[in-house]
Image 1 (cartoon, protein in one colour):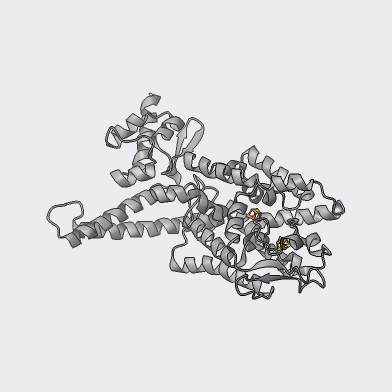
Image 2: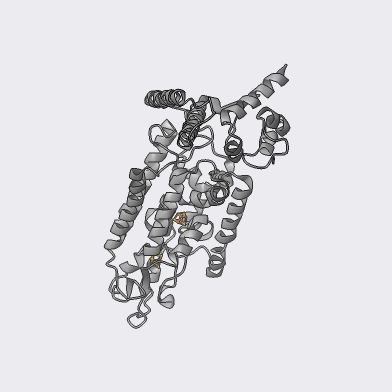
Length: 442
Ligand code: SF4
Ligand code: SF4
């Protein structure tokens, strides 16, 4: 079973590295190379508050993150923490480094048990802190410190030094303490572990058959006291199933459902796991609900020839949509308002919405950035007028008057919400900012 798990881990690690390199080279959604952030279930947790309160997402996050979170929940309630033990590529990197460390240092333990036990609580306040900071700032603030992102950037692009420092600490730390990040810091481990507590199938040690030889505990990468615990309900167990490898003890340790005491044949575990994981992704794609988030300024940069061609094709498609919409707009006389039946009004609204969307989408790309001196800024829908004032120096009052917003409108509501309420598009906002700079250059 261990070999099967290494093969599954290797598959996911390869897929992640492949997708990461492809994204770094081609970028954008055009060649179906979204950033790895799109596949992170934690993104769904980070953006949940913003989505519930305003219907918008933090940077780089989209519906795909909710779908991944959904997959993780299904896996969790059936198979406990299989996501960590079998799928997460960063867990794999740490585990394999830890295995190397074990060989290099002859299984030496580098951390006293008491410190290890309490150290594992660090991830809980860290989780809360990250969520609060994301809600307050409206952006993925933890990205700048995230060793996972730094590692999977594979040396491409610029990441803050803080992320690289965290990555080096985690990789070196993993040589000495297996799954160093998972044990003490990973915020996603909190969610995986807590959902896993509901898990149907868990490792169970039958105390009547257990001879307390400690073989299973030696195999456990998370140093869990299996024999003492009986049924393994701790968040620390990542469901790797390595303990089942303990020779001659297969009968004492098993993967069991508590209610009916039925055992799951271990060979079925990876099959069910993979079916759920890929089933959720491909199912949502075929239903058309898989939509990835956009990174600030990421798309359109660094496109190769194939990418440029695809972008032209995309633009043509947009133009086609646009021309269909404008034709329809003419025939419905969308702009000449009076006396329409409620049906016609509804249709006009749809067309208006479509036109606005196309206008906005075509405005993205090269025009999404605003140059201030030598700095290129990306203004997105998740910032507020007050934040724009802070970033660019353009007074919020100037934007309010130019965009014809009510003078008393809150400067702290994000632009995404203002757009929906007052019907302007990002292009208008960026135009106002550019005009302000033009005016103040003279
Ligand atoms: S604890 Fe975090 S880093 Fe470790 S395997 Fe789970 S999700 Fe991945
Ligand atoms: S208890 Fe068993 S399944 Fe859980 S982490 Fe340890 S070895 Fe893996």
